[in-house]
Image (cartoon, rainbow, N blue to C red; front, side, top):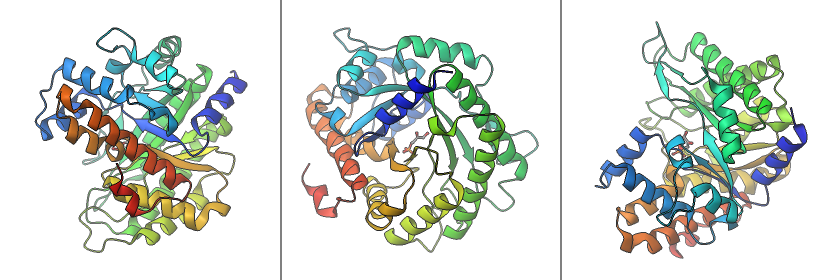
Length: 341
Ligand code: 13P
């Protein structure tokens, strides 16, 4: 294992006040997002959309790494430049989603497990050769009347740790993403308790598989009430619950935590990250930043609509959102900044 190379990648991913852009939607998920705004669901439209993203002027000022999907990592701009090269020229490290989506967890209705461990070492070597320097694997944990079960948490965290160990051996920094979903009427306390338990099991499994915690990045959910919970929480309450939960469960040797947005609006995801820095900056042992997909991309996708003439304005919006998140990592975001795209 080349620890020095892994640590160099980690440092570059967490540099300054930048964060990561998740643009690794699987084909079905990307098609779903396109359908919502009336864009044809074809490979060429997906390529054109990703070209719009990676060629955004100045994106590298706020984004240190971009997570790609298998289809995207092989694609090029219309004039034939591979996306990987465009990203590298912009100072953005290419990463790759390597899980193969979820399936039902046998014997446990409503729960999922993540596929993709079969043949993973060979795929990781291939992605490294293509230029990727980090990877991502997402496990999903749903909250419901009798879930999550211990078995669901054990299975998913075990697989995340196995993936992480394989990544480090292949020279790729593993992003471990145990996402506690926002769907449902559960309250903030329930999300806190489940997230804390999931993270404790995750770090036990990572240690059990001799994963070097100095070369792992955690991608968790923020601690939030469920989307249909009648009692929603204020920004400072979410910031406090999230930081308290993470301080209790994430070892200090982990270099960085990068949040998913999980269905929050872009404005709220940014405001929550900002509040965590404003109130707790001096207590944080790890870098704390963003790895949003929807919370960065959604406004730009809605402007782009699949049309060439909208590319420049969509790119402006994409960069604007990324810069607001960069400001939030410094605790310098204000809602007034939303107006100056
Ligand atoms: P969202 O920010 O849209 O939740 O996506 C992050 C991600 O990478 C999901 O796997």
